Length: 270
Image 1 (cartoon, rainbow, N blue to C red):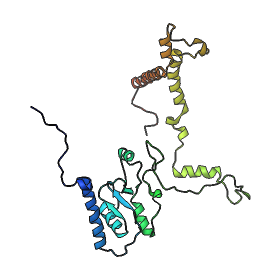
Image 2: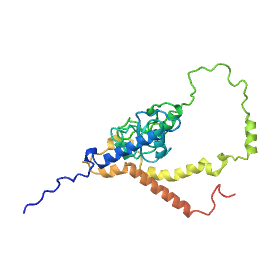
Image 3: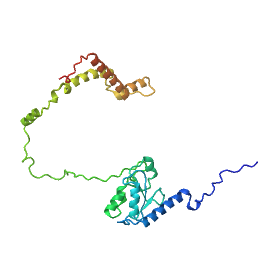
Image 4: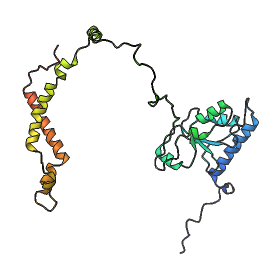
């Protein structure tokens, strides 16, 4: 018995002459937009966005419905779905990296472009409102408006005598201010005493120096992989070995402090 061949195609659903169901739906929505724009002329309508067709991708301020009314009022076209080759600008506030890669050849602009163009009464340059630039293929760069800050030129010579009209405060005034403000001298505080730090270093680092004495002829003692003891020497000179040795020394030092602890901590008691 002869089997029927599968995959001969689907039956005609009535939308083949429009390029399929979705294409027919997009065309119908665009026709509805044109009819609605022509039927309800809005006060203060212009042709600022003549030839501009936008598609709103995701959340935006103003919202998609508000942008639709603005495009209807000012001569633009609003697409409910993205139409490749017909959508001129994509309006978005934020896009994930996957969307950025998909739309890297499109003009993705912030909704401020539409609002500020209407406020200016003319179509502004969209490149100043690009959400992502096209400078990098893998990770496009964010476009921010440059902020110009006044800079002080060091090449300009300074004329006149500096400091003739100002007097530096005397050391006695500083001392009086310190006493009046109630600030303590941190240099005399035990917590900031250098002697404490020296004692800690002297207790820990002699152990490290005794275990790893400095090698004056380092280049002469380097062994190759074929020589005996290569792995031992490599480990002893590795950064991981020094880190683990120092960590063990600090643990030993902290344990010693805990054993000798009397509950009194310098600088904490009042």
